[in-house]
Image (cartoon, rainbow, N blue to C red):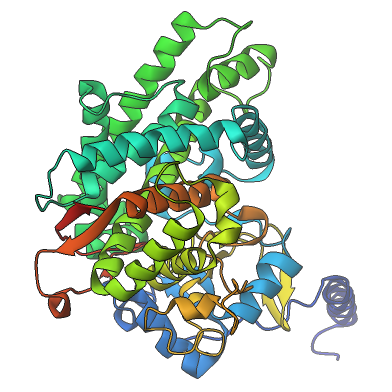
Length: 493
């Protein structure tokens, strides 16, 4: 004591008291979710397979359980693996997990604007406006159903004009699906030979091609964005491809602004421009947010539905017995003299089950769209700091073997009761769940049902190869699964 001196001892005591008081007043964070030990800077890169991240996550979950932490480079990510933990997070604690997790590549492309990639008040206002406006323009109502039926008629006639010659139906389907969102966002459908429309489709297909082919580069960009910005490679072409789509949409918005009449809004774009003019001081409604929101609607409204339909036809080529049952059910309920409508769905339980099984089986977005926690959060006794990136995986839910026996097998019985009626499942969440559930879910489900039933009402599918050689396993990309290229002949019924 004499060596230190009383003033020093008193000072140490005071500091200790202050530290104890501060410690007691600070919430105890608790332990964070466990996970494999990361390498400094590198993170867990070498423990993840960029060509099949889901398999990597499956192995990690076996060791650490349904909630674990990984590091993408220096970025910490909490992964939620399984129905119970995803439900607990996104539904039971929906507000805390309602943030959008932004990966570097997403930030590069979308700049935190639009519905999908925004956060906070911007996201709330844009999503509320989009849902209200889309309803005003017919989404979920008879009006949009009639638009889809009309487009389905155009698609059927276009297919009929192929005269049973084999072809890849992807382009036809993409054109038809894109026209639905065009009619909502831009006010009118395009003729299938319209040059501007074809230019847009080419840009979308180009963007999809790059996403499909550069899984490793996408992962590396998200791990090390600063370095990858200086390196050449296909990721640069993907960014340029997206910029072309952005420029195309921006030009359409500019023309809408020039011809805008506030007394007669023609479409979603006009409604947004009207909102911008009414609330000039509102920073959430700008030309940039309009452009990004339009891109969100276009990409989400085209990609998911067209991929599901393309994949669904491939699966039916592999399983003619399933197609035959659908034909019989459609003939019995709808007949050949009128177009299928949404009111028919409850009377077509087998067809409805097949559509649900297609969506479950293809597992379109296995990783889901990343989330983030909006505040410091506790989940199953684990502490998750505010803004932590969250991967609430969909694949383990859609592939759950207890809910769906033999999940790797395509089986419409997964959605049928013993008496043949349709069976609902809480595990069916291809559009995610909670506050960030896809805003276009209703539109997508309506399109998939009406397009598929219209095609099968009019045609029988004929493969160009032996059915045993048809491969319906997914073509895995970084973020989404898709069907392998194929051709089919449509035989009029």
